[in-house]
Length: 202
Image 1 (cartoon, one colour):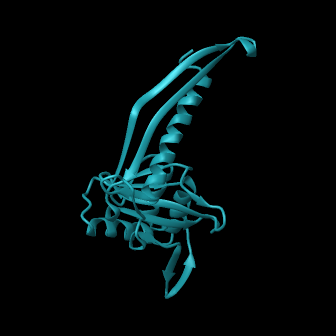
Image 2 (image 1 turned 45 degrees about the horizontal axis):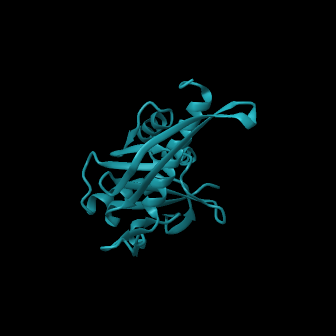
Image 3 (image 1 turned 180 degrees about the vertical axis):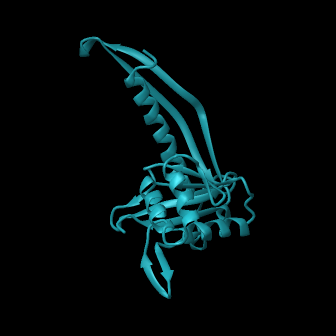
């Protein structure tokens, strides 16, 4: 049954796999050169540290308005275009953004609350992509969010999703559904991606 819970769960798993490919490419190592063998790391200048400086004191923080504004400024200074900005983060970091918005002004709080509730998906010029799959450093509990211009990351599939349905005689003739996909992604412009490090524990 194409619409069964089993098949739908498999489709969601494939979409999560696509997310993992794109997330890894956004802030990981890109490869360039004639043979694609030259490794290029995301420069430190394109990373916003977990420390948030307030009144001269640096403290670990989750996602804040200050970090969002800084990421937007960095992208725009490097030639990003209005309408092409995206921000990938986890539900946890959206919650932190809402908590921090209270400290600024009510209009920010109302806008972020609408974002958290799914009423809007735009804020500060970013289209938000919310996924729990953002990378987590198990040693520090830091989570990597990232801002980017739509032209800075390329995703491609060598072939579309291929699905096979088989009957398994050794398993009481149960029906097996198997899907495969060949895909990859890479960063094309380091200056149009900004890594935003957030502390999940605050």
